[in-house]
Image (cartoon, rainbow, N blue to C red; front, side):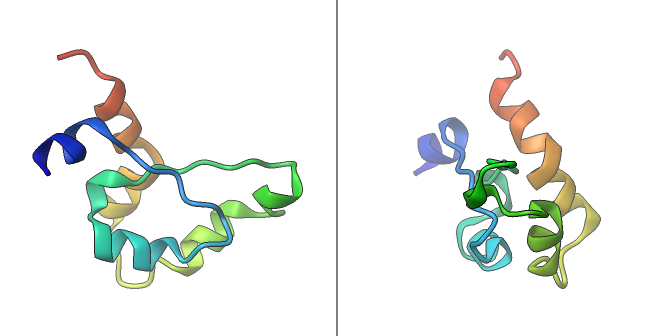
Length: 76
């Protein structure tokens, strides 16, 4: 299980309740992504994600939007 948390990340669709997914799976596993301007990317993916982040710390949001990507691709 530790390998999965170190080596894999997931990018939910903007239509999914990412807040619930992160609460259940862990803050370190999920990354922001969007397929904008395609229809499945929705018109405002950030607004949709933010709507599900009630009760999340700014640190948890920063992990989703930026740091988890940096951690996954940083050397060493």
